[in-house]
Length: 143
Image 1 (cartoon, rainbow, N blue to C red):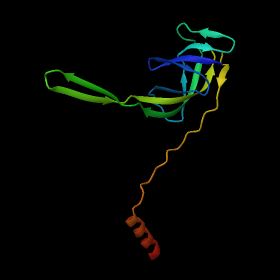
Image 2 (spheres, rainbow, N blue to C red):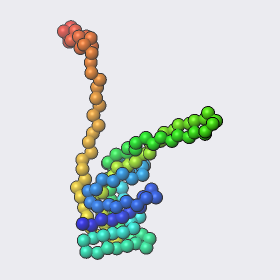
Image 3 (tube, rainbow, N blue to C red):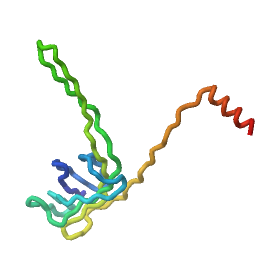
């Protein structure tokens, strides 16, 4: 099994073909292909290449699936005996990506995967009350 370790947003991630990863938020359109060139390690089924600090020419390609928010983290400050309290919340933004290709420094494809299709978000309409249904039925009878 081949994989690569790349760095983005000050963090390191292990990438293998068709794997879905949550990384720090990227400013790109959903569905676009993103290339990561800061590759620290490449592992093929036969060889392992370690960068010093990076591997020149190696690329990890990924498809941006969605930009999401993490769960809420609550921050609570209290100063004892002062009757002072403060509560804050924070939701970190992330980008979900799917790894499509891992290319070596020669440009040879080490691993490749088929990208998944993006799902379109459905708009859910609120349920109609009995009165609204009767009004619609009357309008249809008049026509």
